[in-house]
Length: 130
Image (cartoon, rainbow, N blue to C red; front, side, top):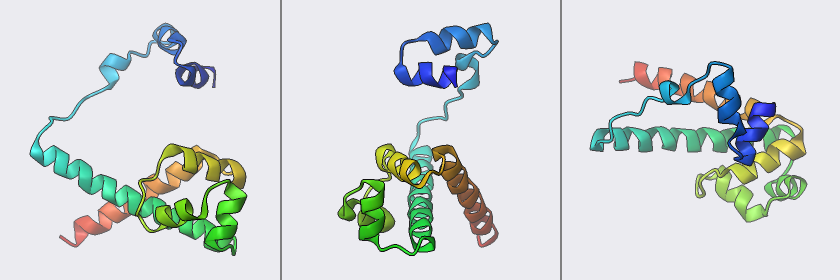
């Protein structure tokens, strides 16, 4: 938690402490080649993530038996923002996702893990259909 906090604060201490723990970020990061194909693949994957995040948010709301307006009010969001996220008309920025996680008392990491799980499942199904 301390490392995460230092990283969020951007004071450089995380990198210093991570080196003491034997973590070398420069060796962990492997960039993909920047090409038309990789850009297209990135956009395709982002589109899947957008749709899955929209479905997860809509699922949470409907499981709670709430309208978009009620859900938005409880989560400190504007109803239009909630609607646009559910309908993939707005990119899923971190602030609204954080607000949803905070006010529903669901960890943001758990929310994102569910998104990752569903994206992986979708990609497996999509691969079988090709």
